[in-house]
Every structure is written in structure tokens, then in C-alpha cells.
Image (cartoon, rainbow, N blue to C red; front, top):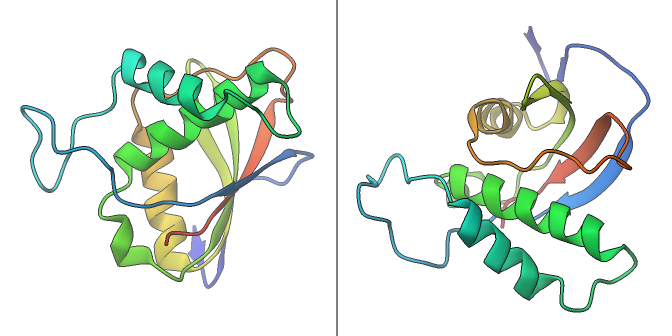
Length: 144
């Protein structure tokens, strides 16, 4: 399944979501979290962050902005330690099936792609895509 710089399950038409810059969480650890496994964000935390980030959406509808902001926040809180992947890049194609996201392909830095695949497949509280979104999304990961 892993071959050099390209990890693939299938190739299909998809929609480019954009660049997801990963950085450490700004807030302190939640009660019950450990340094190796922080707790996933609550739906309320995701909504608050998305509302703040989407006061003035640039180039997308407010609904799309809220969805993308929630995705970014949810993935960031499950991506630890992001600093270990600084300078690496990975592009993933994901789809929503049976109430979860699945990674269809990952291309780029193999170590980051494997981590990204794991994070997306196991992340909790990621929002379902809006109805107007195509069934497959492409996200570029560039930890900073």
C-alpha cells in the first residue's frame, strides 16, 4: 500500500478544498488529555472557532467557510505533534462514507501522508460535508 511518495486507493474527480496549515493548538490541554493524545474538540468549540473565522468569508459562501473552518480545527486538534512535520507536504483526497471520512489517496512526503491518513481516518467530531460539496475533497497539508 505504501510506495515511495504516492499512497493511493483510487483516483477519481475531486474538489480542491485548499491548503490546511497545521500548527499546535492554541489552547491548553483539556482535562483528561495526555501529551500523546489530546481530546478531540467538542462541537461547541468547533462552532465557536468557525463563527469567529468566518465573520468575513473570502471567496466562499458562509456555509462553505464554516464547514472548512470546522474541518481545519478538527484535524488540527487531532494532528499532534504538528511541529514534527514542519516543512513537509502532503495532498490527500478524502470522501465521506457511512458517517466518517476515508482517505482515497495521499501524495507527497510519505511520513506526513501516513500521519495524515491516520488522523483523518480516526478523527472524531469532523463535520459531514454540506450537500453542495462534491463527494470527494482534496486537501493540501503543509505543517508549519
